[in-house]
Amino acid sequence: EEVGRAGPGRTEEVEEEREVRKEERAGRSQVQFVEDYEPTKADSYRKKVVLDGEEVQIDILDTAGQEDYAAIRDNYFRSGEGFLLVFSITEHESFTATAEFREQILRVKAEEDKIPLLVVGNKSDLEERRQVPIEEARSKAEEWGVQYVETSAKTRANVDKVFFDLMREIRAKKMSENKDKNGKKSSKNKKSFKERCCLL
Image (cartoon, rainbow, N blue to C red):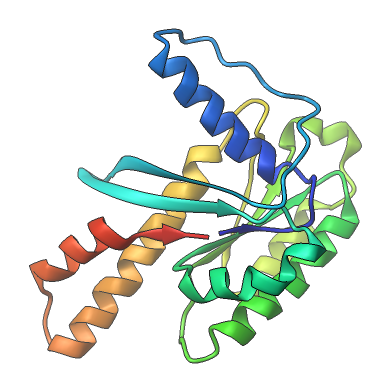
């Protein structure tokens, strides 16, 4: 799940991914970046990717951070297996909002020990407009015990990395849970990961 305030570039990351797929299907390799994308209340898509040699199907929901969407957001938080807390490095308020979204996730998933989650600072291509010092973001991620990564939807820097890192965390959690239940590793867990990887 990509959560955060509307407009910090999260929706652009998802939209950029969609544009790349459209271009690939059309046989073209040129990628166009949408500068003035108007975020929707929520957008989702399903995609098959290869993660460490295994084909995995992922479901991605971009909540766009809309407050009027909060009424049903908890349902998505319940079903989500991993979360990207995305903010714009050019907007300190969007960084501050990640704490609120994290608290909402923790409240909804209170029974879970470790929730796969990454903090993502987007718009790294706009360093000259940075309002969130990298040290501050890293410190917050460290406090929460999660990874911090900076991305650029425009240049695609680290966009794939955050999704793949999150999927690896989800897989590790599932393998650990399966091992705890069965007392050993099981090939059944790999199949369930392939079939049910859900990123919200």
